[in-house]
Amino acid sequence: QPGVGPFPVHHGHWIGRPQDQLGRRAATGLYLALMLDSCLDLIGAREAVVIGGRFQSDPVFTQMLAALRPQDAVFLAPSGDSLCHGALSLIGPVPSTELLRVAPLALETAVYKTCWRELLS
Image (cartoon, rainbow, N blue to C red; front, top):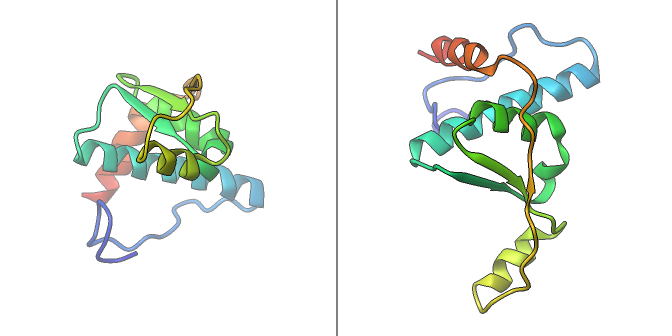
């Protein structure tokens, strides 16, 4: 969306758009991980990232984010309804649950990330 996000002056477009739906879905997961990585850098996030809700079911997104942030631990929240879990934590303690650590995607992401960011400059 022009005017918002970490790159407000840019207009999104495909470069090498995959022909099939599965390829486009995978590319979308990569893109979303790159965007979240940029946002986390902008706010100075470090050490741990917890993914909850709908995004935790996308293995390309979650594993790409883990690969882009090797200095941080990326986890999945075990609750399928993390919004409610988060809201409950505002009013008092909630039962603790174990977070699931995400394994990084087995790709050379540093070069991919550098190329993507160079395209934005």
